[in-house]
Image 1 (cartoon, rainbow, N blue to C red):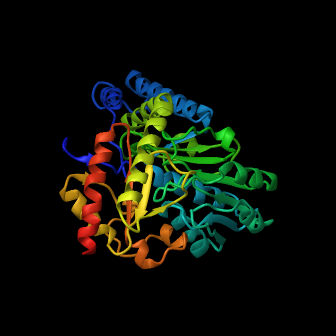
Image 2 (tube, rainbow, N blue to C red; image 1 turned 45 degrees about the vertical axis):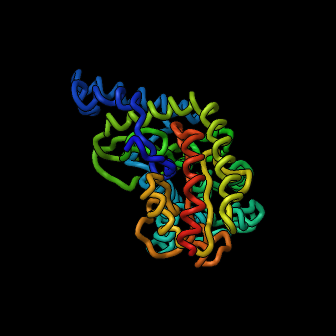
Image 3 (cartoon, one colour; image 1 turned 30 degrees about the horizontal axis):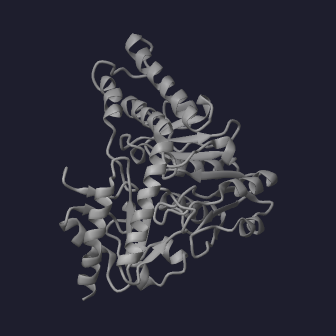
Amino acid sequence: MEDLVYLDHAATTPIDRRVVEAMWPYFADRFGNPSSRHPSGEVASRAVAWARETAAAAIGASSSEIIFTSGGTESDNLAILGVALALRDRGDHVITTAIEHSSVLEPCRQLARLHGFRLTVLPVDRFGVVDPETLERALDKSTVLVSVMTANNEVGTLEPIREIAALTRARGVLLHTDAVQAVGALPVDVDSLGVDLLTLSGHKVYGPKGIGALYVRRGTPVRPLLHGGGQERGLRSGTENVPGIVGLATALQIAAAERPEYAARAGSLRDRLIAGVLAAVPEALLTGHPTERLPNHASFCFPGVHGEAVLVELGARGICCSSGSACHAGSTEPSHVLMALGLAADVAHTAVRFSLGRGTTGTEIDEALSVLPDVVSGLRA
C-alpha cells in the first residue's frame, strides 16, 4: 500500500499512530465497563470523562454538551429526528438544503413521510452555496429545526453558517450543522458559528471508524433514538465504546493543534492541483466554490468520460480518488449534489473528487497531474 497515492481523505483517513497508542490500553488492560461500580469500571469511566472534556475543548463546547455516538450518520439522525420529535408540539416544519449528506436528507424525509412534518429543501447556486435570504423567506412560525452542513463532502464548498445562525437565532429556531468534513481542516467553534447542534466523526480526522459525537447546546431538547441503560445522559443508551471514544478525543486534540500548519500546506497543494488540472485537461470543470472551499478538496467534472472509468484507470496506476460520496458507492444515479448545482446528468456522471491529507506531498500531486490528462484523453478517444 505504500506505493499508492491516496487522494481520497474525504472518504476516510488513516488512523494516526498516536491515536492507536492512546486507544490500545482500553482494548486490553483497561477494559472495564464505564458503568461498573468497581476500580476497573472507574478507570474506563475516567477515560470517557477525559475524552468528553477533550472533544469539547476542540470545538469550544462544555463537556456536558458532548454525546458520543457510533459515527456521523447516527449523530445526524439523532440531531434531526431527536430535536424535531421533541419539539413536535411547537411546530412541524424542518428546513435543509439540496446538497446535504444522505444521513441528513433521509431523516428529514422520514419526518415528512412518517410523522407529518413539512419539509423545505433549499436550493443552492451553481457553486453549491445556500442563500441566507432564501432561508429567511422559508422560515415560518412552525419551523423548529434547520440543518445546513458546514462544508460539502462532494464539492468542498463552505456554507455561510454564521449568517444562517443569526437568522435562526432571531426566530428561536434551532440550527444543526454537519461539520464532519470541516473539523480538522477549518477552525470550528460552536459559539462562533452560533449552532445548537454539530456533528463530528472520528474517521475523517485520523481517528477510528465507528465512533462519532454530537454537540448539543445546553438546554436543547432531544428525544433519544436508542433506549436502554440511559448512558450519555439518556440520549444514547448502550455500553460506551471506550477505545473508540478515547481515539476520537485524541484525534480531535491532535487535529486542533496541527490544523493551522496542515490547512496552509494542504491549501497550497490543492491550488497547485486545481491549476494543473484546468491547464492540462481540456474542458475540465472545477465544481464547488472557486475560493470558499475546504483547503484539502478539489473536485472536477470531465465531460465526455464517465467518472467511474477515470477512477478505474487512475487506480490501475496507483492513484486513489473518488467520484463523490463514498456512501453512495455502486449507485448508478448522478450525484444529487452536482444536480443541485445545475449540472446536466451526463456531466454529473463525469465527476472525480481529489481530497488531500496530512501526508500528501507535492510529488504525489505532480504524479497525479502527470497521469490524469492521458487517462482522460485516452478514455475520450
